[in-house]
Length: 279
Image (cartoon, rainbow, N blue to C red; front, side, top):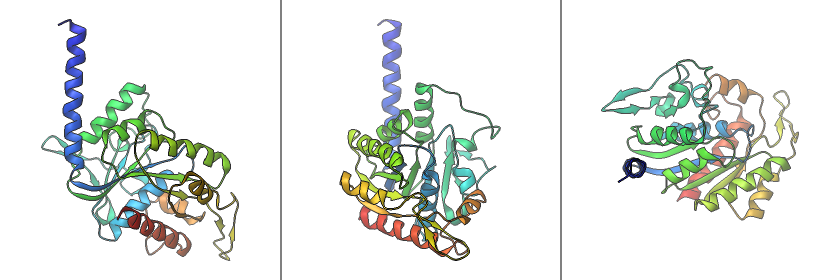
């Protein structure tokens, strides 16, 4: 057999073995949810981290996989910034955040937090598959996967790895430009044969911290309208609350007792709708 053919055969065998490992680990997870959007800046990581954390606070066993190699935000948002996963039996052990939330992120594996990951597509795909296969999640009720924006290498790699995922959560803002891009994300889910579990409309109305009045700065209702047009479920709308920025930067859950009622209630309702959708 020529050397090139032998190398290709060996790579295929390694890929298949790795996929078997991934599927074995996934079999211990009840629900796998991919959180994505068609564009950046819509609060996708905020939604992924706080949905995961909300369920953990309620007693569920939950994991959060930050699959954004170039802009990993999960460590800061979950209060695990500066911590590194340990190794046991050759596997990465997730860092444990408050309420037992298990977190893994490329941001935890970089020697310097400001170091960029300057990788082309094949290397990114390989790194993500290794990050999935080499993590000991144990038994989980839910695993949330925070994907980078768009429908490129990383979302495709994760979708192909987690073939038994429950589906995709799409995060949008009320603006048309966000919705236009999120329609592509919905169609991406269809192309990889994953259902859309639901749409979240983030930044849906600004809630004044002084008087509590809500003002639709970025409009409101566009996410629900898009969900209806695309015939996918709508999970809820999340208002734009100024305190959320500080809480996320401080690694605090926005459904905790110190969170403003407007965002706490909205997130809790969205999570309850999600859980009902998965039954």
